[in-house]
Amino acid sequence: MTEAYIRALVIAELGNIAPETDAATIDPNADLREALDIDSLDFLNFVTAVHKKLGVNVPESDYAKLLTIKGAVAYLLAKAV
Amino acid sequence: MAEFRMPSLGADMEAGTLVEWLKQPGDAVHRGDIVAVVETDKGAIEVEIFMDGVMGKQLVAPETTVPVGTPLAVIEGAKEEAPQAPPPKAKAAEAPRPSAPPKAAPKGAPLPEGAVRASPAARSLAAVRHIALDTLKGTGPDGAIVLADVEKALSGAAAPAAAPTPAARPKGLDTDKMRRAIAAAMAKSKREIPHYYLSTAIDMSRAEAWLAETNAPRAPDTRLLPAALMLKAVALAARKYPKFNGFYNEPDGFVAADGVHIGTAIAIRGGGLVSPAIHDCDKLGLDAMMTKLRDLAARAREGRLRSSELTDPTITVSSLGERGVESLYGIIYPPQVAIVGFGKVTPRPVAIDGKIEVRPMMTTTLAADHRATDGHLGSLFLNEIAALLQGPEKL
Image 1 (cartoon, chains in turn orange, brown):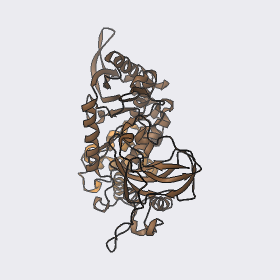
Image 2 (cartoon, helix red, strand yellow):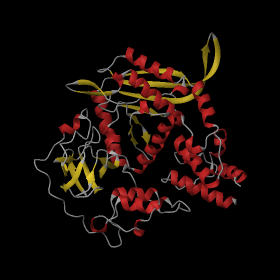
Image 3 (cartoon, chains in turn yellow, red):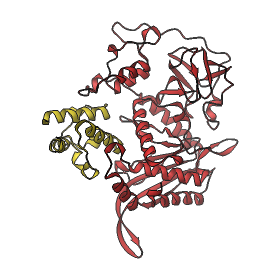
Image 4 (spheres, rainbow over the protein chains, first blue to last red):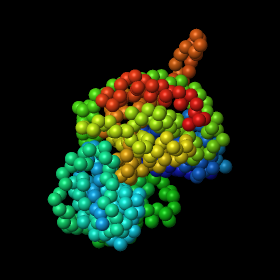
């Protein structure tokens, strides 16, 4: 699974959750909660989506590692089979 | 024979626009069925019917704006329905009613060449789910694409490979109209309701530990959020102290509600707020509460709420803790009599058995109507919420 694929998937899922903002244009180091105005329910939906699409079950203790696009891509790239 | 009327979907609503009929003449209708979509300041609302019968003549055509209370259709074989909005919503009775059913409105103006005729509800759902309207076949009047057409397309559609750009997404909710509706309701509240405010700090260590332990073995789609615990605690406290769960109207005064239907404040990105009801919160388990919360938040942001969700809240809960706010003092949504606010959970030094310990503390507030209750009862209500959150496994 390539980094480009995971990045595209992350951006697509964030776009589904917060369609008001184009996730592809935000700073990859920006805090997603502020950049996309998402709350814990949105974030849970994001984690649920990547679990279904990639099979990566992100524990709550790792949520902080996915709070930026850069962090999410790196985390999922390391965990995805 | 009975009439199905334009419902009042809030204290501030005087009229609504019929977007589309979801039942056609001759269709059987049952209590709780969604029969129409109505456009309001809060988006496209799916309107339920509260009687059994058969859809008869439809008196109002799509794209027609009529006052609250206007007969929309005749329901054959049904008795005159109970008010679609609960009795406490006095505004419905005050709203002007026409002396006779309005004539069917003319069909919509011709569309520009290349434009797609579609209902707002269909446009809203298509936008959120990234369905191109011009790829669908409409089954509505004049071939218009209606909600059912988009839902049918979604049922067979594959997940999008990538999200479209925002420029390709039509606006789902009119946040300017929503802002005006909020302004009207909040101004009415501040003008008419003598608020009093209380706060208490709740130790969330047990709730946080229980949530972490409960969620650890679960897949993400079945995990619980603290919001589920807070809603359930408020619901149980409201059941124990029913004077915070109901409506105040002149001249009758306070009337307790039959059920505990919590209006859950949901922020709309880009501005705006809706507080639709989660029905019978006191009877829901935490898993069911989470399912309802997820569904409600998704539909609120798509502009696809149901009429009963807007008319039924008996008390409101709002939380800004995730945004870093430590305490939130709400404004009561009339004719309700209370709103509970939850702030951010922060580690604070507290005295425990004479020793200083650092605990995760959450400031919880109550704004209540002094015409219905006093601060003494308010303090008991808040204390009950705090006590319930000390036993999360029992919620």
